[in-house]
Image (cartoon, rainbow, N blue to C red; front, top):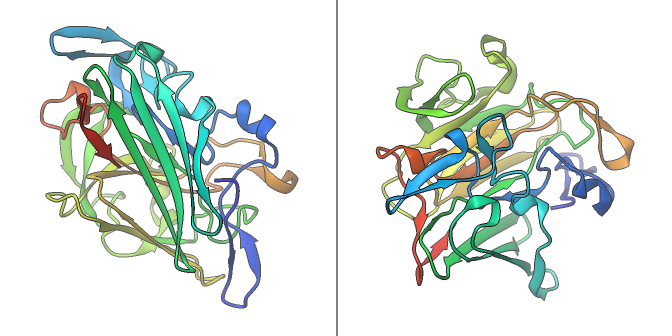
Length: 298
């Protein structure tokens, strides 16, 4: 997503997502601006997993671990346009080959961006395994700032997250398999509050998978509500996924973006709806395994 221009409470227009002005800058991007990430979003500990008795060693790109599919994940390849209807939708597709970044099996994926009515944007991702079982976990990695992409930071904006638990992680942000109740912790956002109100209690900021309440069905459910009191802009996020990674752009530093504006830490927020990170290595997590002849909608 290159841009999304919306009015504020006074009718003034502004571009909301962070990003770049040119395609060339996206080719060398390490922030995952605007991307659909995969084959497996988020982190896989030790860059390995076992499936059907076979140990797969995939390509590490964050220390000894794999992040967002490896150094050449789905955010770093060229997708082709499959269909387009003006003011309605556009669908992009990618054919991932057996062994790409170490993952098994050929995989066909698509992402559709849809304009629904005048104030709703829908994103639908699908994946189909063609010849082998494979883990799949696609996520949209847009950085939002409801003030505008050049607003500064998102710390004064409020968020409500409909989740009372998170997946516990170690010092490298790899899940341990534990699940933590967050009611009294800085992670708790069941009641709306400013993003920056307790962020100083964390080492760097928010970068954690929330286990969404009411995950026992595949229908769309409300995930989060974000609001900027200055502009009056408000965003509701709905998804059919069991988790969401809340990330406050902790590691952005001197990234020159659209219009020459320089993005710094906390310049945007990501709400990446997803299966649980590293689920291929934790039996108690909801697995994101796709087998041939089965379509996964995400």
